[in-house]
Length: 297
Image (cartoon, rainbow, N blue to C red; front, top):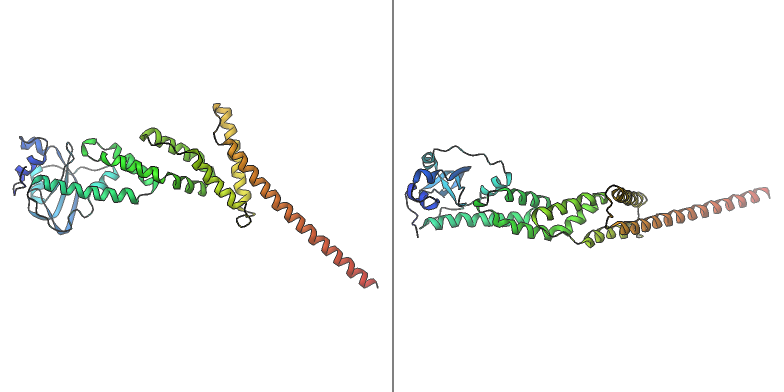
């Protein structure tokens, strides 16, 4: 096991793929992040540093810290990370809360990688569905030699967990978004081999809304008819898709059923209101007649 020495050259060779030629080994490293720290961190030369630059090895994914003096030994310019997720991931949130002593180069490298794992696990669990898609796309576009592709499966698992709640949230915001939602999840399945959600997930979300706004407590003279109009527009769009592509939308019969349920509820309320208004009008006419008869006597 290679020792972690107070020696820049030997430690760089130990952490690089090329372990013989120092000039070539230095070319494997790219400077991607700078940080001025209040707490001490550990340079690759084993000295304590506050002015820190992080370097990534583009061939084996190792990450190291360098102080100002050791940065000059690379004689490299800082690279710009255009991939926002990569830049965020690689900045390593608080990688050294206190100064650590390492006996071997591998211990040092493992520590940094562990910090990265902790950060990414937290990021995956706390991100929204849309942010996870961005995260998945960004990491997938990173060269696999960076060693970050190990997070792809974890992101995919988390996305599958969030799909039902994502569909319900999108449908509740606007039921008309179902076409875009299905397209988006279809592309996700195609691009990353994530299983498409069961069609019943869409049905459950929509039916829950319909059941609520057709109930005695959920009905609204403004919301319910508006929702029915959107369902009606969806059916017309389904028919148009059939004409244009010859494909029958799998949820057509379901939408027709929901549309009828909404229409019946709306008509029922209108009939009740008409009957109520009619009864009030008739009662008022009877009252007027009684008053007229009383006056005539």
